[in-house]
Image 1 (cartoon, rainbow, N blue to C red):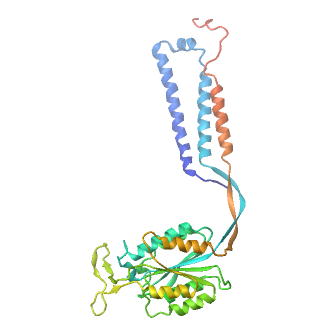
Image 2 (tube, helix red, strand yellow):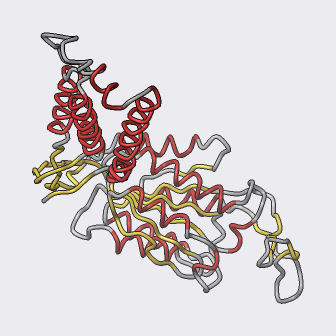
Image 3 (tube, one colour):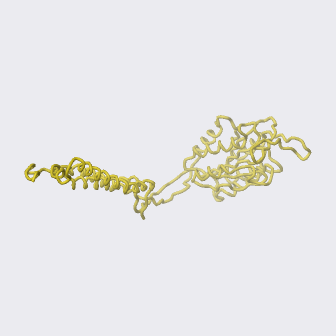
Length: 343
């Protein structure tokens, strides 16, 4: 197998023909300059010590050296090698509430954006842990299955918005159940669920599901986001302009507030802990520290095919050509410098 890792440098090779044309132009200009001084044949005899063939070779060797440099910068790679990568950590699923109540702006810019920023920061701290995402409101579904690809997880995180799930509500029990299904069923440890929500559960059985999850070795950490005082939920049009606040069927403005009690009970039921979201995101650091102290498991032991860099040969060739170019003389020694020049 063969490839260039930085193939953008190959475009430099396209400039070499223009470099050749430039040197041709320079040589012709030199010849015209000599002719302007007098008879060209006479001027060539007077400058017989100039090694014109050597000058051409110097240019040719220089251009070849430039080609070798561009090829080296493009990082040619040949063949593959196998590299074993071992990882240890936990299986971590982060369940994020995407219900409309998370659009409340008691935390700037709003609860949902604040939660997504905290999740992104947490993912940046992970080392070897598999991470998955569950989105929930009136229903729950797996947004990103357990993976070691943190970049992919953060990409899926960006798409977690209230319109992702058309069913209204906040079913924490659905989120816990979906997380249970996502873990490896036969294991009884190494399972962590981080639940981020405003805690306003509607018609759910979260505590019962938390007990069931605890028997399967799932430890749940809950993060409450929002204020304890009720705040309205703003509504926006397609252009981002606020059109008012969410109202009930009776026409009253819906007020949403954080329900800490439910979240505390869920966490305690599984041996986890409840945290209130703070501007400094200290709660996530504490959760990560707690996860880091847990017994780890081998999550993956894979062999990756990796290309071997072979640019060294082109670097050596370029260096050799430049050295040769230096030693090609531009003048030649004449045994009888003046004899025959005026004949």
